[in-house]
Amino acid sequence: MKKVRMPLEKTTRREILIGALAGGLVATVGLEPARSTPETMRAAIRKVVGSAQVRKGRVDLDVPPLVENGNTVSLAITVDSPMTKTDYVKAIHVFNEKNPQPNVISAHLGPRAGKAKFATRFRLADTQMVTAIAEMSDGSFWSASADLIVTMAACVETL
Amino acid sequence: MTRLAPCWQAACVAAVAVLIAGVASGADIPLEQRRSGYADLGRDTKAMQDDDTANPATLWVLDGEALWNRKAGGTSCADCHGDAAASMKGVGTRYPLFNEALKKPIDLEQRINLCRTEKEKAPPFAFESRELLALTAFIGRQSRGLPIAAADEKLKPAIEQGRKLFTQRMGQIDMSCAQCHDDNWGKHLASSLVPQGHPTGYPIYRLEWQGLGSLQRRLRNCMIGMRAEPFDYGAPEAVALEAFLMWRARGLTIETPGVRP
Amino acid sequence: MARPLINVPAKVKRGEPFEIKTLISHIMETGFRFTTTGQRIPRDIITYFSCSYNGEEVFSADLYPAVSANPFLTFYTTATDSGTLEFKWIGDNGFSESATVPVTVE
Image (tube, rainbow over the protein chains, first blue to last red):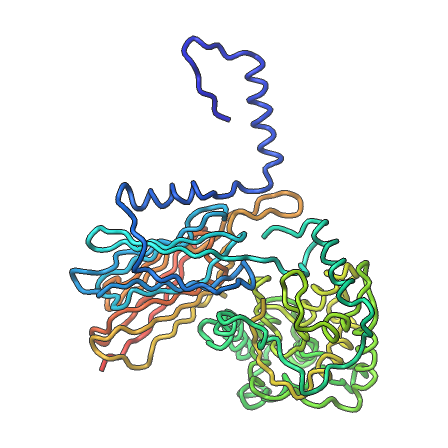
């Protein structure tokens, strides 16, 4: 629990107690991990992209229309690129907005890839948006997003 | 994944109660209308099952192959049974089987453990252990593409007991297997599609488990869903229910190892 | 028992990209789950995957807890010369697995 301190402000006994209590509470009650938010996803994207502009397009996100189980969601990403020595996809980064962490996977390609396409399976904690960002050899960034609906199994194994 | 809050569970029960109100239970699905859970899968899950490299269950099948050739207590499965592709072909289509010595039906897991203890003089594998799942997946895989066999006459009492269990209400939710899987297959329960519930792909890689599991594990999941005390692994009731389910699915094609949500 | 499964076409055409499919056994424990008594289950995931073709890295990936258990990864690489494809998986708790597969270019 952060508190901005004004100059000459004295920490009162009351403030110390509240701080300690808040710290204690987080330790015992925090059973749910902090969730990502659209803002943390944007921050994670900014870490990769910096101040460069991200344009929509050239990236195809292939995900199932309805997710049967959030534990295993198929994902295939294709980027429109000639994949020559001078014009290729450097990396493809995948982000989500509601899992405990905003990153999913980062794939590093290069001219030898031949085809800018990769596939994997990932987890979704809840209905949310997934974003894929392609980093090109010319320094440009392109993206695509998909909204995925995640439902729960009707009969769970443990209570 | 988050759990269903109790209010949602109650809503599910209420929804199901409305669904089955006034419907008679226990009528068998007409033979030509029967379908494997594979038919209900989404495009990507089907692709996962169809491609051996994409199917995580293949990892267990490979482990099973290694175990098949590994000596335990001085002998290996291969020492007696040779090449599994030949000797185990069809085995997965006809278990549970009536065992003459024990005078009771046993399933494939119990058969493997019998071989372990009696022939190999080795300790039995625990139910749902990685080794036992790997071996049943490997052995079951040798029957992929074959139809589930007609039941032996000696299995009739077990099949009847299994049918009783299948049609009897159980648990706090007080519903029978038949009410969902015979009377309401194809409909949705809280956005999950209700399958007919045929054991065509066991052991399966279940996306919910992110792992491989046996038919008995899946049945226990269902019973816990009904808030009923699940049958112990290897219990005679569990084997009887397996025998009934295999009889109910006679003629359907084995897909082992399958992928299911 | 962590064995990787790799699928590479039997023969590939020089200059053409071909698909490589990989699957490895791993629990990919996220680190965000808790036991029934409230203990956090520590993270245990594969964090890095790479593929080298005759010694030169042609593909790699950084994996996060959001990747499903038993990670499945497919990608493409252009056929240059016949030789060896080398695969490596590295993860938490010193996890390290590698495999090699021959590639025949015609």
